[in-house]
Length: 141
Image (cartoon, rainbow, N blue to C red; front, side, top):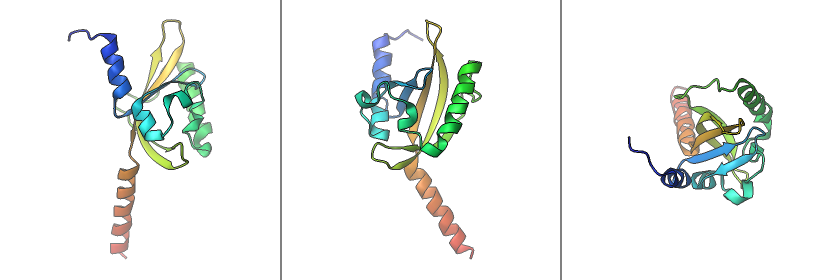
């Protein structure tokens, strides 16, 4: 495969319809693309350097940060390349979202580690699935 100019690769990441978010080892947001802006409603400038807690519902934060710290200490995620994680999230306006994401640890040249995620909003699909299950349950009663 021909090597692409890094500007082309960065342009793809910036314009991807899925959210691409990168946080540092402290859990601070360091990259937030247009897809993440669309999904969560926060402009990149508004979340740059802020904790990922801005999108994590409070009741899920401890579990998230415990898992994050384990992965950072281990230097690898327990999730494989093909794993899609499903979790609740928060939008800027307070709406609850359902998101799917894949995660990868990204070693930096200085020895630090970043964590990257590719995120998709599946809220509408999850609502349709719940409605279908509700209708099936009513039909069997």
